[in-house]
Length: 437
Ligand code: SF4
Image (cartoon, rainbow, N blue to C red; front, side, top):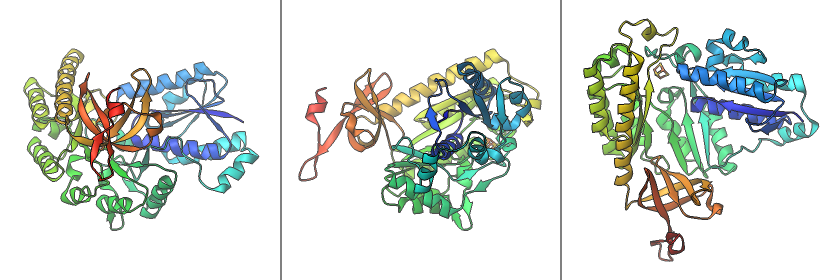
């Protein structure tokens, strides 16, 4: 039996695609190994969204080759798609796979190494049980045609495509059968999902009708794709009160040169509308600092917006040139020390906003999906529907369960609470035994 180790960089779409490969290869008898171990085959699913992602992708390939110089090394993903020559030039890489051929990776490995007899039985028996049973990512859409000036994704994942609704629903039902409580609908441009007359809001509604799925979460969604129909669909109780809506800049001039189709006022209006319709929602965002031409005043506009909009989490990226993109050719590139200072300032503002959001939850009761045990702190951790990570005392047997938690405070920026039990009359009370821990 051959062992395969997987490493995934980047977005949820990549995570999903790796998971699909793993399922098919396990069905064919390959054994999944840790990426830190010596394996017969390594599959590295790369990302190319920034230069950092490129170099992390190369580092992962080199790590695999160090772990086993004799291994068969397969490289897929956006970096492999955009820079196949660079990847192939790394000595020891055996296969560089373009996006369009990704689905054929299991077939190619089976052709090379063969499938075991046992596995043929397994695969006929039906589906292979996925690895974790708390949250599953389901890709429903791929590709982008927006061509934001800094972004290379439209060159790597060309054109927008959506999966057929029937295939998505079948997959969701299968995940529910396996015991997944939460599913994350993912896409490069999730908000553009369309299959005939079914758009994202109708897809959410259909997903919410599936027994067994208790939570539906949306991956990143662009600001111009958040409309009333989506907010209506988010009223279903199964839909998590969380949206990740990339801002990128709070300055109208920078947004225009980025080719982002909104201005700061429209973005703010949208966020306010979301908050009115979905009280308590956690809104997270991405911001790029040091985009070409971003002067001090423009950066101040971004800071002011971050302070005003109370995001529950902020991801800060330093702009870096990417070949093929418009921004790489723009004048007024910003010096690295300036980008560093700006990113440090924004990270600080982001931490403050996160702390404010966390404090606002004290005294509230939230439903938390328990995902893991923190052995050093002897507690459980999980995510509330608003995508805040919560720490609580409790037994490991609660992993994979959704429990009601009374938020009691914060500790080093993390939200802490205690599980609520329900008495015979349906009234909640704190689990006293656990509260004392
Ligand atoms: S919307 Fe813009 S940032 Fe997002 S994938 Fe498309 S081009 Fe890239």
